[in-house]
Length: 97
Figure 1 (cartoon, one colour):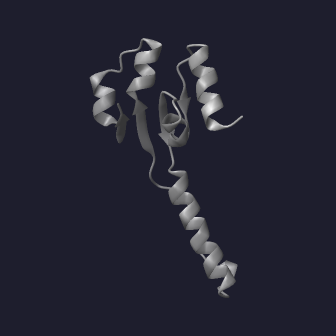
Figure 2 (cartoon, rainbow, N blue to C red; figure 1 turned 30 degrees about the vertical axis):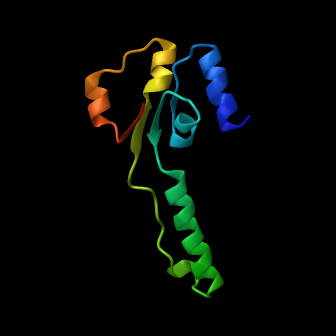
């Protein structure tokens, strides 16, 4: 299943969902709280570049994402008949309207 199919299946069953990746919220999901995959892929590409240029893998530091984002899709909430509390909206890094 792709992202749109997963979000559509959750919406069809009127199932409120919380995802680990914002891409599913962009596809119509309700809420995500997790890392930015695009940023992780960019970091991975810089590692590949350094390795291909000859940097020994042992010289590269281990990295782990340190930022997580809360993204809320108000269109999905409305379709599910949910009201998102103002306190949660205030803490969101992004709100899709």
